[in-house]
Amino acid sequence: MRLGIISALYEEQLGLVEAMKGPAKLIHGKREYWAGKLWEIDAVCVLSRIGKVAAAMTATMLVEKFGVTHILFTGVAGAGDKTVQVGDIVVAEALVQHDMDASPLFPRFEVPLTGLTHFLPDQQLSLRLSRAAHDFLEQDLETAISEGERREFRLLQPRVHRGLVASGDQFMADPLRLNALNAALPGLVAVEMEGAAVAQVCYELDVPCAVIRTVSDNANEDAATDFMRFVQSVAAQYAVHITRRLCRD
Ligand code: ADE
Image (cartoon, rainbow, N blue to C red):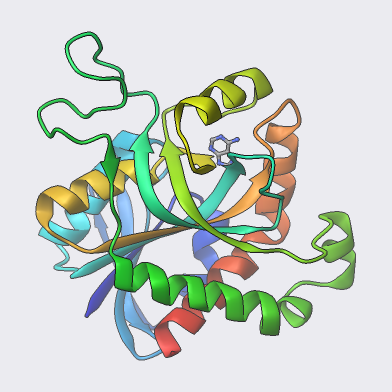
């Protein structure tokens, strides 16, 4: 296995590169790719930047230039449903591009000429990821995240959700738009800006992938502030500890 790990934000990637043994930096396509060992697994970490095109380009390069056999996307997301709270973890069971709409030529959400609205991540990798997320919440959360931070973000009993993740080139910060999307996409648990693009690339290149997101905000009027606070304080801890458990177990 050679695992490509994509994050969209610097803060989410920092801990992973720090944890790498013998990291070698390669610059390509205006991105830094860090290749090395992550807890005995051959890995390449890269910052995609934000949005579907950036993520698709990065996933393609990981496969075509860096020879990864599996791709993991780790980052934060807005809650896609009222049952999902800040600090919860979402593992994608399916991914959809919510801003794809070529109707009436093709049904809403269908990626033209693929016949698909939903892209499916690898079941085995996603299952391992869910287990790693559960173990992180049960065994590492208290030591990894300070009591002050747990209080600040109300991380009382964070949960792991499996469900539909919707990606689009929009930061979702409007409850009306979110409600409309939630109604149009049954099973929606999170909204973000990259996962479904990576899933499409992986589908087309026959590479197994998985997407895990920590919920940073409720995709409402406070989303931008909540997102910034969450990313700057605790998001990195989630990413590092979950990835460590994934690679080790
Ligand atoms: N990533 C984190 N929060 C998000 C939101 N509200 N919309 C889109 N992407 C996000």
